[in-house]
Image (tube, rainbow, N blue to C red; front, side):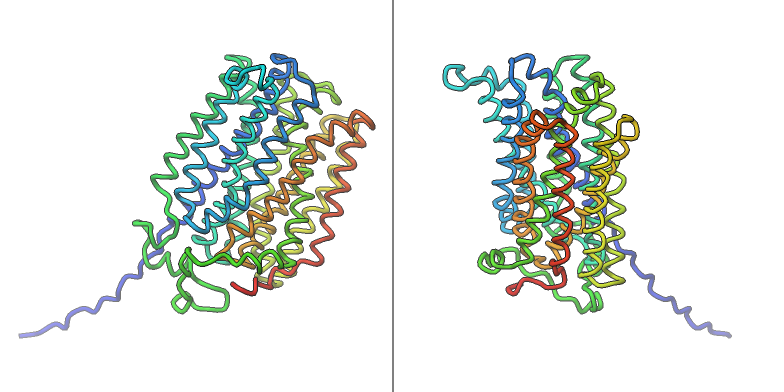
Length: 445
């Protein structure tokens, strides 16, 4: 009688789940909605100005009302993300700004004209919309700090950044088609409904931390918490999110204010594309309504394409050369290219070549932005919402200035010198990367 020894089987290794990448896709969708709801008014601006007999200066104030609130509420939005978590905070924010997107269509009829002229009614509504959207990017950054491994930070933030470009790419033809087919007011109702649907999806699937998600396995947690220079198993657990915010340390840190100044120059230029670029194509380049809307997609297609490339290269450069040099190479290089491309695009007479240059200018700024957002997590992971809120506050302060200043410069000098001056702003901002030290964390973190 023969006996057979039992066959020894090796344990099957578990494969890490991929919930973190689904979270990234959700942030992509939310970011597309943010740009849909901020770009739609620039496409409808001509119709709104005609309907209510508004001047360019009044429309500039309406544009800037959104950006003013968006800038002012960046830090509160980031602090709320750090304190209460991005799942609830971002859901409430999307519902809030979707409601005020719809109200944009009826703002002129909701306030007594004797108290609030049409222009000021629209200023109030767009200010409230900006309050809600201010929470979006600090909450994205807080989510990425919680969900993504250090080696993937720049690429991860580049995905919602690219989503903004994709949303802005789709917005001009969508809004123009809705305006032609149904009227400009209906385009805002459609935008609001899209936002509410995305908010419901985020609330249903998202969680503040990977540990809280029912579909994340142990292997994915090890990947997420893997730190530079450590094995995944030895990396420390994340601190509780109720940790006190070290305001004194944050507000006295040179890196924070350098990031803010760099982002201010980027915001100055980006908001030209988000507000006056369509009008520039109609007035300075003589394009028709539909052709102008199609050409307006050029910068945002460039943003969609170049943003993830910047994120990937930034992560690779940081791994190869260290964070200080790696982040600088991508961040500074992108801004230098942006300034030169904007300058040349403004001067080229041929509209097709001009759009290539102007589009590259926008795309190169977003190529650089992933480096800036990654640095906010590098220097302060557990307070990334607050730090990124300060940075984005400065960026949108630049965005407040350009919609007001650009039409003044265009009227005084012409559109080409006005855009050339913007190129100078971004070139000066690029030099500040020489003084930034991404490898130096906040002292209290």
